[in-house]
Image 1 (cartoon, rainbow, N blue to C red):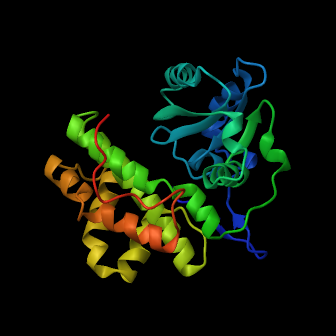
Image 2 (image 1 turned 135 degrees about the horizontal axis):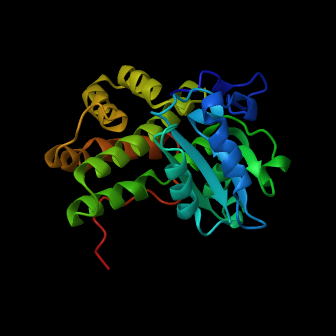
Length: 268
């Protein structure tokens, strides 16, 4: 579900609706138990996504958590998912290290933006407490999705090697690519959004010839349509939609490093 409060504040910084007081009552037991069950001293736990913005729906929504310096994040996710299977679709726990938020790289900058504006602290040390509000600008957009070219090459390899089902690869392609499109919309329109549906509507107006492909990705990402092997291969082709988005993103926003090469890397 889109965050209706996401956008740009009067001072030009990123605004979101994430807050501990926004958690719907149906999800409160999950959030409280997650915070209480953090097993490792020094680890931190955050909530993000639709539960953090109050837009989640009982039973059908996931609960998204971010664990910092917690090696057994998968175990925590499994325990909470089993315990609350009647209240949510599942509990996902993303892993990070404290060092992922340090330094001057675009990646670290994007991680700090995400932690500051999209994550709600639940337990453990809170490195987000000392972070300022970040400006809604091209560096924030690049920090979020400057790895889109790397993902494109990774998806090609996954599809060719059979790593994962066609549906799972298609869903990953859709979600990340449309998030990158949202970053393009943010920079093009001098706004701020991570809303994939909004991104599809707006970029389809900017480049109407891309509209059918963007709509196809939206269906894959939302689970309303199932991709075929041929469709995913065409989307990931050197002349396909993802390659086009990678080019547009590089021109408008930029990458974490140099532009991805058009020549395929050799397998190692």
